[in-house]
Length: 84
Ligand SMILES: [Zn+2]
Image 1 (cartoon, rainbow, N blue to C red):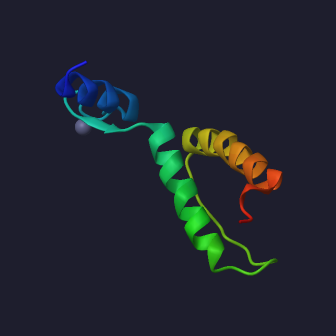
Image 2: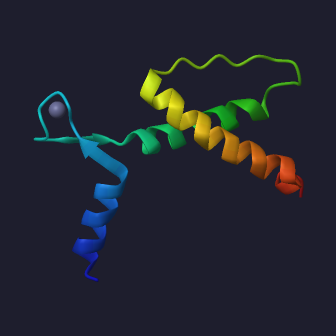
């Protein structure tokens, strides 16, 4: 696979056609945004104490994707992977 083709398939995986300009441009896909949100939450969580609250506001589509990914991360963390 050529480098160009790899980049194109990666872009296809990470982006969606922009709904506002009817696909003339691309925007980050919902799973890509969800991954960024979750990384941000994990980054913030490091400096929080138990019992602290972190409020994240998302639209419905992003919320559904984030919930699925958060469950996966939670399972990963509860399996003991966060401890070194
Ligand atoms: Zn657009």
